[in-house]
Image (cartoon, rainbow, N blue to C red; front, side, top):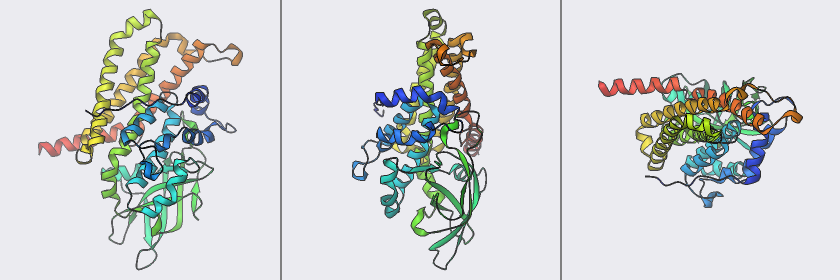
Length: 380
């Protein structure tokens, strides 16, 4: 089995996340906490986890990066969502054959000077034959060294207004496979919408992106063959995403453990069963990512992702049960806020966060459809 050490956040970062998790989740105009997430995660060295030292990283593996995301998700799922977007874009650069693109962008992404976003939800659904690509690349010369990029993506996280680069897949109509480009925010024709009006995770800089005849040359290619590249990158994409579920489930179960003796006794069996299931699924995830087995067996990773979402939902319900009626009380101003009120506010936030897990692309419905198709194919 893969051996992994739980990641411990620096005390100052953990304290900042705890203090501002509610504000980040319910982010409103004028609140600057969202803009601080990437720089603070970077100062803690989190984007360097799982990146080779020779490339400016801290060493370790993708599994270590998953654990780092889980550590952040224990405190704030919105911040972990941002972390996932940044670290996944970094992963694309690590797996790209475009050495020059990696050398140009990796240092600024690792240091948090620039934001990286993964606009590949549409591409992952395309890879699973769920929907066509929504972006198109038109070669502008015979050698296909320059392209005009057009299309729209309705939902991308970590599009920091201060500047970003986003990975997006583009269909080509010249017989070549779909191409994967890194698109900078300041390229002509790139338009970012206002932040989406989410019910939670509002500080994640999630917005829509439109490209209108954006011209880029081949130096911006992450991969010339998107399906082949994503088949290799998907285990890391989904694995890093699962870190959010792992951390949130752990924190919800810790909240149950911190409740009164009577409540702990009443919920002990359920909590123990969920903790055992969480540990089993986490071990399966780490083994499959570390060994590379999920490249050839994507269905096995889909099952883990679905299982983790189920554990998160059940853990959040236990969290609510442990909080009891206090979980329905709002803080009535700082002067009236007590530790108990703060704890139950966290419970309410975790319930909203848990409700988000099933709809992160690929959604549970999409994964279950893929599993059903896989089982039909096996039966045939």
